[in-house]
Image 1 (tube, rainbow, N blue to C red):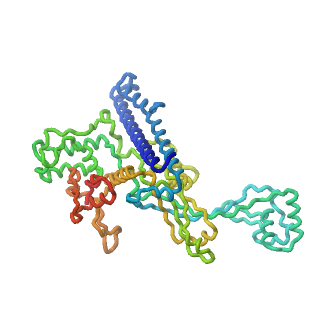
Image 2: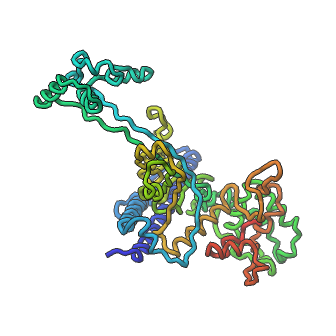
Length: 524
C-alpha cells in the first residue's frame, strides 16, 4: 500500500527521470541540427546533391535518428514513458487525500518558502437559452387573456444587435406565471391540467448560474529561462577571455586590474552581464591554478567549440521553452464573505474553500522553438491557435485542466454581496526535503544567469520609483570593474559563526537551507 513517505521518493525519482529524458531529447535535437548544417555545407562544397550512405556524416545521422526514434529504447519512447511515470505517481499521491490532509505529513522543522502569484478574477453569470423550440410548444397568447398583457409573457426581441434573441410564450412560462400569481382563472388551470393529461411536452427551464472565475499565473520569480548549454560562439568567446587573462609564469594576483579588465570588457560587451558570467564560469580552464599559484604554460579548456566533437553544444541562444518547476501540487481558493444582513453568523464566518485540479508539471510558460507547429498563432475563429502546451494562458477551460484556473459556483446572495477577501494558496507536499532543496537551488542559479540577473540590495531600498526616492536597481552594464571579481570566480563571502560578520549571502543561504556556493557569485 502506498503511503506519503513511500510515494515522495518515487515521485522524486520519476521527475528526475523525466528531466534527464527531456535534456537528452533537447541535446539530440541540437546534434541533428548541427549535423544537418554540416551535411548542407559538405554538399555545397562538393557540388553533390546527396551524400553516399557510407559517408561519415550520413552514418552519424542514421545513428542519431536510430537513437532518437527506436521503438524499444529510443529517446522519444523514454520521454513518453518518463512523463507517464510522473503522472502515475502523482495520481497515487493525490489519491492519499485533500491538500489539507497531505500537508499534515510535512516535517514541521522544514522551512516553507512562500512565492508570490498573479491573479485574475471575474464574476460570470450564465443564462440558459432554449434553442430550436418546436412550434408545438409555442402558445397562442390570445388563449390566455389574463396573462398576455404581462411583459414577461409577450414576445420580445431581447438582443436585436445579435441577430435577435426572442422571448416566446411557452407552456413552461405560462405554468410559472400561474404558480407565482393567483389570477383566479379556473379555465386556464383546467386547460393546463388537460394538456398535462394528454402528455403535452413543455420546456424545462434552468436557473441562471452564478460563478467566480479565478485565473492563476506564476510570478516572475517562478519562471526559469536560463539555458545551461553554450553555442560554439559562446565557447570561443569564453576561451578567448581566459587566453587573454592567462599569462604563463605569472600569478593572477600579480596581474594589474587593466590586464584582467580588458578581456572581460570584450566578453561583457558581446553578451549581457549574466550570460557573460555564465560563459566565463563554463569555459574556465580545468588547470586554473587560483590566485596564489602561477599560470601553467597552456590552459586546458573543459569543452570544445566544435559541435561534431562536443555533443553538449546548442545551435542558438534560444532553444528551450520557459518553464516553472516549483509550483504547488494544486491550488486552493479561500473566500471570506462579507457580513450580509439575513445571513446566519456561522455561515458568513466560515471561509469557503475550493480546490483546483492538480497543477501540470512542469508547466510551460512560453513557446518552444524546438517544436514545429505550423498552425501556431494562426486564426481560430476570433482567437489565436496557441500551441497545446501554452493554450492554458489564453483559454480558461484549458487552464482549469492544468490546475491554473478555478471555477467557483456561487449562490445568488454571494453574487450580489461579493466577498471581503480572496486568498489563493498552494503547497508542494509531494517533494521531499532533498528534492525541494535541489529545485530551490536551481531556481536561484537560473535567476543569477538569466537576462536581468540577480543581486542583493541594501535593506530599506525602495521597491518603486517615487518623487522622493529612486530604486537602487540597475544592471550596471557599463561598470566592468564591478563584475570582474565574479568573472574570475572569486567567492563573495566566507562562512562565519559571528553574526556581526555574516554577509548577505550567508544569511540567505542559512534562511533557505541551500548550498553556500549558490550565492557565491551574486553581486551585492
